[in-house]
Length: 327
Length: 170
Image (cartoon, rainbow over all chains, first blue to last red; front, side):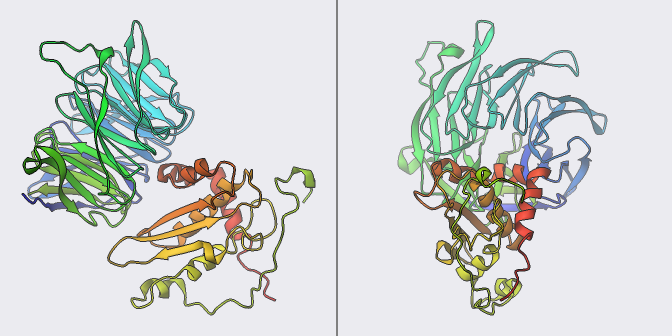
């Protein structure tokens, strides 16, 4: 059945390109960040969405990406100024409780692991850093991982295991896990023919989707045998399906709905697209909705609401943050 | 000026004579952007970039044959995706200034045009020893954005964009 996107809210305030939107785990707060060096927190008040908090003075350059801890207490922000800031909810506001330094230059992505034990960052210096989250407000660098040959665009933790996934300008995706006492690269996934911009997991943790400047979406799967437990270091993903020909330019962002398994994508063609399993094609995944000109210019980030089904947030080079209902 | 000739990447570039008198009486960029009937054309885009100064010589990119009108293409689709492609030709195949030249072209276009234009800035096929790497870097929006909020680099770019802004006519 045909689906379409209904614009619920059009949120203005950022004064430069908006790079990332991230939903609070409870789905009631949306965070966004921008080249204007601010983080904005948006929440619903009656029928309106309003900017309830603006976090300034945390960074000296572009804030590139945001990540909420699973308990929703902490928000981490990665910046081109080479640092990562950690914000903690305190009553109605947020305080910057830590600034992580170490990367040589731009930090491009930050991710909390599901247990709240680790934080990961990556950047233009081609490295991936794992941070141990110790007592409140203390972050100890546990590993500086070399392996990518170019800048690392995004880090994302597996939804239930301590395995970190990183995607890079070197066209690869790498998997990192603890081998003995040390963190090490346990697999490198080849396939994309240009920069891999982002990836996201299906909730079973045995499949994920990645998107790239090569204008394709790739679906990756780890085989499962009933009754056999797969150890972390044995997770081997292979490219089981590639979708091309939908976005005519770079695909910058992809998000998987934890409710329906539908994949939302956005990119340089200003459009948001939704892909889902098509019953008429034996459950193969295909395009089910397109919102052309979702933003006036590039779409930089899309994110499904984790708590409210069929709601998507997006942001773009037009400085606007939007909330959509998929109907 | 005190730099020894040996320090140049290309110490003896071929400079072509440019007829600055012969330029067409163009409508202003603003007029062009608003003109529903006659979209922006390649010549108008070329007009924006021809006087960018080469980073190491006191000549324009046009005078050094780094950019030519024929290597600019434009799709100005008001209701679809508008795009601009500029292909430039470094004077020598190992030119380490190529990234900077490409960045200057991109910044000039970014500043002059509304962001609905999707920009592609690449080196001519076969013109540079690191062609693929260069093209990838020049067209990665995150790298370009990071370069543009780097104060030192943007000063160098600005110097190339303004040095020849008022060419001596005749």
